[in-house]
Amino acid sequence: MESIYKEQLLDHYKNPRNYGKMMNPHIHKEDSNPLCGDVIEIFVRIKDDKVDSVSFEGKGCVISQATASILTDELKGKTILEIQSLEREDILDLIGVNLTPSRVKCAMLPLITIKKGIIEHNSK
Ligand code: FES
Figure 1 (cartoon, helix red, strand yellow):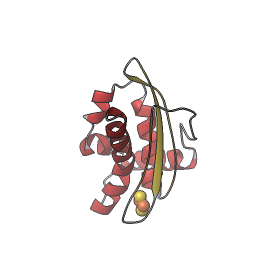
Figure 2: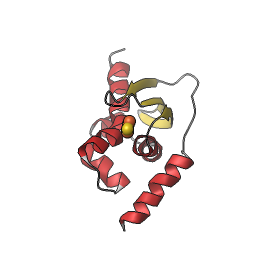
Figure 3: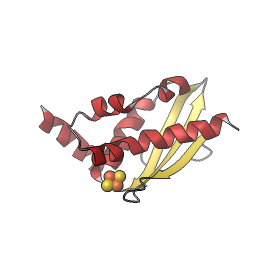
Figure 4: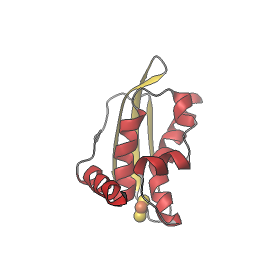
């Protein structure tokens, strides 16, 4: 079972979904993993309090970049509150592979980035 998920991760890494910059996003945040310096930049447009469109750019390991691709697919149509309530377990369920603690940090980078972006957006 797990090898299917590994293939899925590699596919998302090689062919990232929702990749690229966005003009005039409502939420825009770049963050990095302090352990390695890998970067994720997320762009979100909101309509009726739901994610209307979302994209990302980044550089880094397979886990961080593939998770960003998978997560951005998942975020479409979600409300800000729903995104804020996503947790580590939700991300691990999404990617479906067992990770070492340092690799969990890679997988969490995209969600952490968007949550920081939401906090900034809400404080405007
Ligand atoms: Fe840098 Fe994974 S090694 S985010």
